[in-house]
Image (cartoon, rainbow, N blue to C red):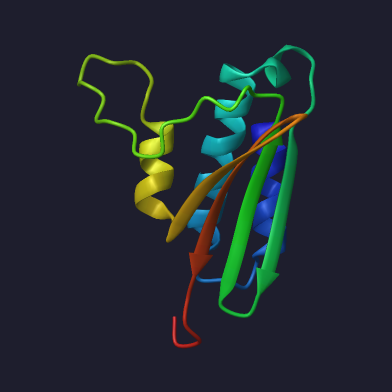
Length: 116
C-alpha cells in the first residue's frame, strides 16, 4: 500500500520540484494510517492529491479515531518509531488534521515557485 501511494503521488507530481517531498509525506501518512488505525486491520485508506500550479495537497483518510498531536515531540535515539509525523511536519509547508464521522484525514501542503 505504501509503495502504491508513493507511485500515485509520483505520477501526480511528475513535473514538480517537490515531487520527492510529496512521496515522502505520502509514505509517512499512509504508513501511520496502516500502523495506528483500524484501517491497517482490513479497513480502507484513501489517498487524495490535489495539484495546482505551484501547489499540492496530499490527504490520507483512514478509520482513525482522531487522536493526533499537531506538534510531535522529538523521539529519543533509542526509539524504533515516532519520527513519521516529525518528518511530515518539517517537510511540508502546512499540515493539518480533520475528524469526520467516518474517520480522520491527515493532510499536508507543499508549495513551489516557477523558478524552482
